[in-house]
Length: 380
Image 1: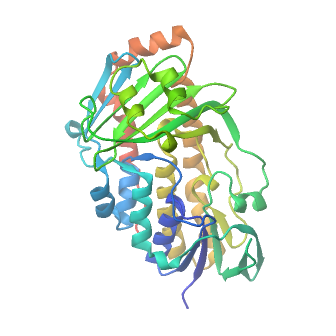
Image 2: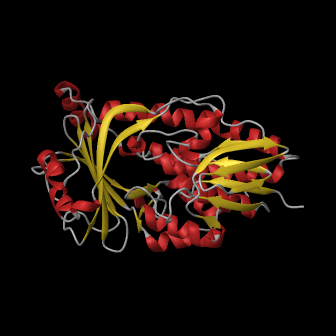
Image 3: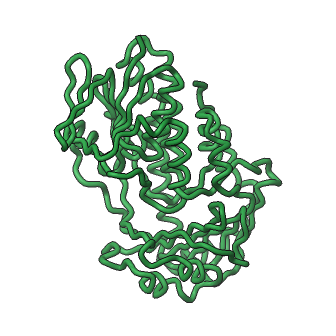
């Protein structure tokens, strides 16, 4: 008889896990606390490791149609001086990165999995294990299955019951994010950029269908503290080089997102018995390597492969955890280091950064991309 699973959370990690488990014969139902299927966030860059996962999930074509291939990239100073220019085609990585609106990615995953198996308005209040696992929801309903996957994000209710490790760690940075519509001469399709200032960083990339994702990150121990408007963004980035102010101006004020950036220290326990964690519920990281969603996609492949070969549920879940803990912990740590080096307010370090970056061999800068591309993910 086929195994059954409950997945808590319908974000990138939850839906990709549901697809991976379905591909290996598990009957899966997804439970989402919100009343509509809506991904929180603006854009995401899917790097080569995420592209590999999407191909294994058979969702690559739908995602590629909805997004924009990343063929060119630049690192800039705040006033537009080019520090580094990257051409992904020349190093064999054309088509191996896609910028996409998070909602479009979620739609592609939901369509592939099947929306009739996604239950909305189901806020988890707890779970019990007694042979099988039973989830209890705030509306009084319950669901039972052979195992449960907690993919419910940074403030995971599943994680809270498992390890109860309190609030996430504030990184002393916050960020604005938005989606601009239109055409921008300084930001063609299939391209993106990151610009550096002192304790400030601004990035933009095409995400398909004349939409452009942008973010503005700010090093500030106070956090955002109510700075949520377009004018707040322009107060800091309004005099930066084109197309940065123009991207902000082209975004509706009520669609600009503001978040304090948080993560958690890696933990040794992801699961117990017939449950485990996945994605941000397991290993939330600050976004300065762009690997949060990508690592969730990798998780899903590992989970599906582990359950496919497992003699029993608990063996499969512990195998999945052993496959993923060290790699994701390293990305948590490296993302913090990337924040430290790119978000510094020190004039001396900023000057060194702007001096050294143009002198680095392009192949060295591409090494990270090749590493992500060469990471071997199991078959489903």
